[in-house]
Image 1 (tube, rainbow, N blue to C red):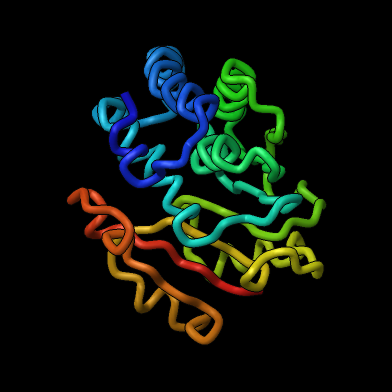
Image 2 (image 1 turned 90 degrees about the vertical axis):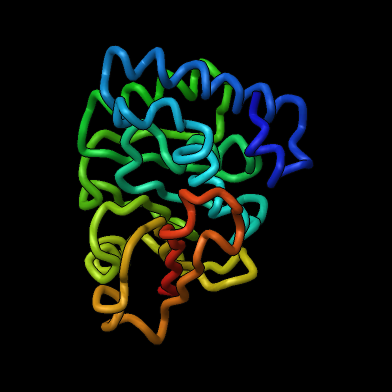
Length: 207
């Protein structure tokens, strides 16, 4: 059952529901072999990983044909849940840890999504252009901005300027001070009722 996700995304197609349900089954199986999600957290997969990833879809509806880079994807978050939700958008998932990117690739293959590609390596080895980079707490936002600036496309396809969308937690005032003028922070409890989201934030920086 994917009750929490359907609560906030009531218009999912049958195929999307089946794929999200498959994620909930597949990740624990893979996690027993390769630790991509904290073992104490795997029972909260729907809320703390899939729904958390989909908070980006509450902030922006990516236009058809958009290109999204998921930097530091680990086992596929937020890229794979977003790829399920936006089948008309291309996602490129990058991670330094080969075994984690392997899990993401195998899970994407198992659920039948084809709008994703994978790269084992560092952001410096990625030379493609994207509308947005998405990431979950990989590094401080100003450092991320410096790393991915070269990867941001000058072509605008979406309702907001191209840039970086990060999922973070805690107090971010000092971290964001140097990029405050180009940055917007949204508390995720604006989107979701669950207590987990009270300390979680989405941070968008235009580039």
